[in-house]
Image (cartoon, rainbow, N blue to C red):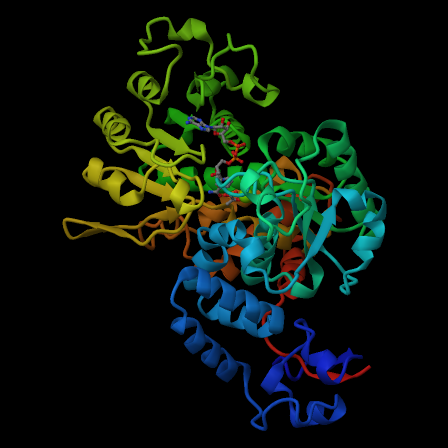
Length: 561
Ligand SMILES: NC(=O)C1=CN([C@@H]2O[C@H](COP(=O)(O)OP(=O)(O)OC[C@H]3O[C@@H](n4cnc5c(N)ncnc54)[C@H](O)[C@@H]3O)[C@@H](O)[C@H]2O)C=CC1
Ligand SMILES: CC(=O)C(=O)O
Ligand SMILES: [Mg+2]
């Protein structure tokens, strides 16, 4: 059934009010009948256009933009003007536009948020308004909110504390929920919890738009977040609450506090660990080995690093290793070097990943503790994962040492944006003479060495959270369980060309993301049913729900409400 032949949607707005509503606006695509019924005559040019013609004009304008940031500003303005057209355009050019709407360009957009600001999108809940959170939630004109992405702006990508500038991230993530996971944009809401900022540049900037105050912390912070969560759940009890880019000290505690009470998820911990597991699994398959046979070094033992590490330990155990052996094959290197069991002041989530010092008696180090190069030299690692948010730490010496001890190392500099990566693919492939398999957090074109092209997988949670959201909402899951994450990971790996003997790419193309999201959503929904957090339904029924839930960016006919 074409979109125009679906039943007309009742709409109350008319005239400029209708044109100013980005969720309803069709601009020059309003039909003659609609122009009459909604009093739009004279407010739009005479020619009645199709969405394809409108999108073609927008694409021409997009191509005329000079910088990536200009392209971002252009796309965001279009989103604020006409969401259907925006998502139609994005759907036609998804692989091209992802690096603009998301990492790396969204990082610059967040850094410059208060300077680039044109129009508000989403909700800003500032600490001084803590007694009015319920009222602020009611400010949104959207009644039927199904997904909220919330940040407090303290750890935006690898860029640190950007205060309310972090709003770019919930906006970007939600754009991907729609573009890649078919979530109706009328049902999504980006939120920033403005608890101040410790970024002196922002505090001293008269144009900074957030609360000019140092971050509140401790009990005050947790009780503020709690007021927010309670107010959200009261307003929209079946919402899927997605936490994004919280600082390490808060990310896991908040997830632990809420994950068994509500349908919520931390993308940096859970989404990232699922996509990393998928990528590693797929890489191992192409190399005819298995995860249990890898020795893995992490640089950065934070939310993402420890989340991925725990997921990999579980995968190794599922592949037959005992837990102690699995943990012995995973090395976490943070600022103070390798995490070992004699370290007193490390957070709880790092403790289980500490290496027993007794096993390292024969290890040598240049300094106090074992740093990355020491660990690379002595662990016989096969995989190196960077989640430190620090540029250039995978030096030529580190990579060459890794490659000298291992036939085909797998190197994953996952930190975002590109300016904060541990190494760039071209260098890694050059230093390893094309032996390394490379996956990055931000997107890269294939690297050509001696005429041979090496595809670079983008190991980013963007592959997985849209499909997870789709599965959770379509199946009406009430919680996000670990099994749902593991199911999402293996489902993603199964969609890779390498898994289907259709090439050597270890992750699918974003051009195929709708199909990929169906596969992930189905796996998530089935796991939710199995875990008893969604109503019992068979696979056919779940797939029908998922496909029915998927929103496509096409205009529907309107009738006066
Ligand atoms: N590709 C993807 O899908 C994702 C990528 N990331 C990226 O991973 C990075 C880290 O994110 P989180 O783990 O959430 O942050 P985090 O702040 O929790 O962890 C970063 C860790 O790196 C450590 N670190 C800093 N400097 C270091 C150094 N010189 N040597 C060793 N360790 C050092 C910190 O002490 C901290 O423990 C960010 O750049 C983020 O953009 C995060 C989530 C998803
Ligand atoms: C991709 C992502 O979530 C991050 O870099 O924080
Ligand atoms: Mg993130």
